[in-house]
Structures are given as C-alpha cells and as structure tokens.
Image (cartoon, rainbow, N blue to C red; front, side, top):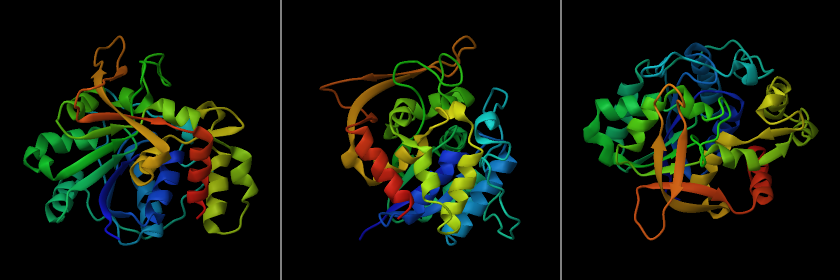
Length: 302
C-alpha cells in the first residue's frame, strides 16, 4: 500500500495524544515528522508530551520543537481543561528520548525537500509553525499536498470566548496567513468535535488491559469537565486525522473562510459554504456522528 507522507503539528493536549495514537497505528500514513507548538499548555510541556508519545509509539518518527509564542499576541493556554502538564491525570515518565530538531522551520524544510511525494500536514493546535514556514519557505509550498486542520468555527461562535475557537484565538494572525497562502486546506471546525462525543465510561470500561489503555484512563481522569461535560469527552483532534484516513464518514464542502484579527472579536472565524465554485478551501461535516464516534473509539484501541 502506498502511504501518505505526513507532518503532524500538535500541542498535546488530551485529544492530541489520542489523535497521535490513531495516526501512528494507521497503515495509510507515513508520519515523517511531529512538531510541537504552544497551545493547550506551554511549549516546554507540549514538547515533552510530543517527544514521549511519538518516540514511544513511533520510534522512527522525527520530532521537532516548535515555536513557543504566537506571531503577535501574548500566549494563552488551556491548562484549566487539559491539566497543568497538558495530558490530564497522566504523568509523563522520565525518559531519555532526544529531539531530532530544535528548529521547526528547518525540520519541516528538510522533510518536505527530501520527500519524493507531496506532503500532507495535519495541524491539531494553533497554526503558528505552519504560518512561519509559509513565510520562510514560500518556494516549497508546491510540495504540500494539503493541510488538514482542526481549527476555527463554522458560524463565528467560540469555546474560549463567545466569538473564537481556541486554536484560532491563540494565533489568528497565523491562521489568516495560512488561509491566504493558496494551500489546499481542509477545515475540521469545532462543531465536528462537539457532535462526535464519546462517553467517558467507555474508556474506563477498557480498564488497564495494557500500558496504553491504562495511560488513556489516567489522561481522562484529569481532563476537566468543561471540555464538554463530566460524562463525555469531545474528540476534536482525532477528527483531523480521521478526515484524511477515513473520508467516507464526512461530507467535504467548498468554502470561503474569514478570520478576525481585531481586538474586539479576535480569532472569530466564519466558514461560508460555496456551491458551484472551485475553492482550495474545504470544510468537513459529519454524516453520522454516532457511527463516526464508534469508529474513532475502535481505531484508538485497535
């Protein structure tokens, strides 16, 4: 089977960890590089989380430390949701894993240049790294097949402010750069994560059958209920991976995207569906939320 070369940009983050586990297991993907970014927690914690999960579950995948602050605004995190370290109640063990790169732009440049095929990028957090790469290496954009991004909101509603989804709020200037770059982009907006929820008891019922299932339980034990509620876990980032590997569960619609970079409604996005018109931007909608949630849960434990 011909695999899809992939770079994953992430800010682990509870659902980021689950998305990484799914990506590493999927035989359709060749995950060449995982980059950390500041988002759910600070860059030191997201990098440590990224390094541990990647090297433990995909030892041959390269890891790069990303950019630690947004392009313009001050850094804000979501540690009140994901826990101080970013991975809920799980404690990352002491380890000897080493970063392959401490310069994310160099890492992306070398991986994309060396690839014999166009590379697909999956972003699970604020999109600072990709925006910075676009500015630094515009000559390599033709080697990017598509960007699958868990970011933004369809209707201008938010989950960190009344107007902004968290990833777009963290660095709207970066999102604006990416939207205007001409790259093919598939948006997986916050609404997708909100309707594809999994009862937390299903994870706990899997118990401690192995090291991974035990880690999942410990992660969720520190995942704050404000993510959805005390009974469910939203699966935002997993959908970005699944939209690439299992497109049958989604409907892809051409769209236009606007990003507000003003102070008043910073990070607000509107994804406007367009018909009978070509666009390099698409948005996913879920065909059957329950079937999709079940498929993602099954894939996590496969």
